[in-house]
Every structure is written in structure tokens, then in C-alpha cells.
Amino acid sequence: MSQVTLSALKKSYGATVVVPGLDLEVRDGEFLSLLGPSGCGKTTVLRMVAGLETPSGGNISLGDSLIFSAEKGINVPPERRNLGMVFQSYAVWPHMTVLQNVCFPLKVRGIKKEEQQRRAEKVLASVQLGHLSYRKPNQLSGGQQQRVALARALVAEPSVLLLDEPLSNLDAVLRDEMCEIILELRKKYAYTMLYVTHDQKEAFRMSDRIALLDKGELVQSGSPQEIRENPKTEFVSRFIRG
Ligand SMILES: Nc1ncnc2c1ncn2[C@@H]1O[C@H](COP(=O)(O)OP(=O)(O)OP(=O)(O)O)[C@@H](O)[C@H]1O
Ligand SMILES: [Mg+2]
Image (cartoon, rainbow, N blue to C red):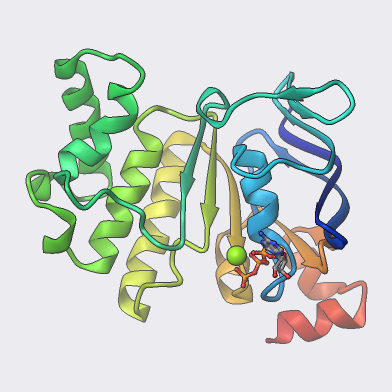
């Protein structure tokens, strides 16, 4: 079963068409990277899946349920999509401690305090932040803040994890470390992941499959090896050479 299905997904802002009509599937347990140059529409696609941006047309399904359909007038609000999202800017709440940040998604779901803490502590340990639970974000490094954001996205056990360039604000060492943490979590919990990046090295290192976008259109999708060995267009071969 495919976990995320986009069909004829469109987005325009006024007369500007950003995504003309995208068909794409992320399979259950798959790590799929949306790769493409700046401005090609990657964030827009991710935000439509998350429900933070309303598509201009098309359908989005999660598993068997339709969560957006322009035709049928369906638009499930973000908090009922059961997705976790990590942004490029860490977007952790500065006035809350690490533990409070991570408990928050459970708090809004009405989960009891002890249970919130138990689950938050477990996920914080999995991103190696257990010892920093009582710090505020301004007492953390960028890499640590990004791990708080990751823990917060994971704590409610989402069916799909959406990541928008989560490594791009980090220096090379932290980027490597975060990359390892994501890959380890994935191995352990078999998350379905839709990962946005403009960095072809990152995409090749982490993905089961890569979907290359140019001007909002899918140019090629396949395993890193397939794309490397058989780039379909000049755009793809130029882009993957960096
Ligand atoms: N609110 C908006 N109004 C008009 N145009 C917009 C709006 N938001 C995004 N765009 C345009 O949509 C296009 C796609 O933007 P998007 O942020 O999805 O690109 P991206 O692939 O994530 O780029 P990057 O790698 O730089 O993050 C861009 O050309 C951008 O200018
Ligand atoms: Mg973007």
C-alpha cells in the first residue's frame, strides 16, 4: 500500500503556476526525497501534504483516506492528518524547555501529563538529548535545536514524517550527525518519510527513491542507482553532477 499519494496536485498563486499537476507516491516505509533546484516547488508540495497550504486542484491521500480533494471538497485540517513535520528553521518554541517543546503535541491531544513525559523522554533519548530536557532552546546549539524539532515531530507517532531541508542550517559536522540520527531512527521504526532537499549528495545518501522536480514537474523518479546510471534528461544529468 502506498502511504502518500498525490494525484494531479496543483498550486498556483494568482496567475503564477508553481505546481502544474503532480502525480507521486510515497510507499509504506519508504524514504523518498524530493530533489530539485531552488524555487522548483519542493516546499510548496510538502506544505500541501501537511495541510499548511491549500492546493488549487487535485487529490492527496494518506493510506486509504482522502485528505484533500478539490473536486469532492475534502480538506482535512493539519492537526488531523497525523503527520510529523520538521522545518528548515528549527521552529522550536523559545519560551518552553526542551521537554515542554516535545510534550506539546501530546498535550494538545489531551494526553495525561505523566504519559506525555514518559513518551517525550523516550523520544528525546532516541535523538540523544535526554540529558538536556530542562534547557531552553537558546541554551542549545543549532544541531541540538534541530533534534528537538525532530523529537517533537516524532513524539505523536505520525504515520508519515515530512522533512524540509532539516540539515541545511547546520555545519558539516552537525549535518553528518543529524543525517546518522535520521537514518538510525528510520532503521529502527521504519518511518515513511518525504524528505525535501536541493542537495543531491544528501538525497543520494539517504533515499530509497528520489523524485526530481523542475518547475513543479516531476522529471524523473527512481532509486539513486537508477538515476545515477540512467538520467532521463539533460536537466537530470546536469543536476546530479552538481
Ligand atoms: N505565497 C507565494 N506567492 C507567490 N509565489 C510564491 C509563494 N510561495 C512560493 N511562491 C513561489 O513558488 C515557487 C516555489 O517555491 P518553493 O518555496 O516551493 O520552492 P523550493 O523548491 O522549496 O525552493 P528552495 O530550495 O529555495 O527552498 C517559487 O518560485 C516561489 O517564488
Ligand atoms: Mg524550500
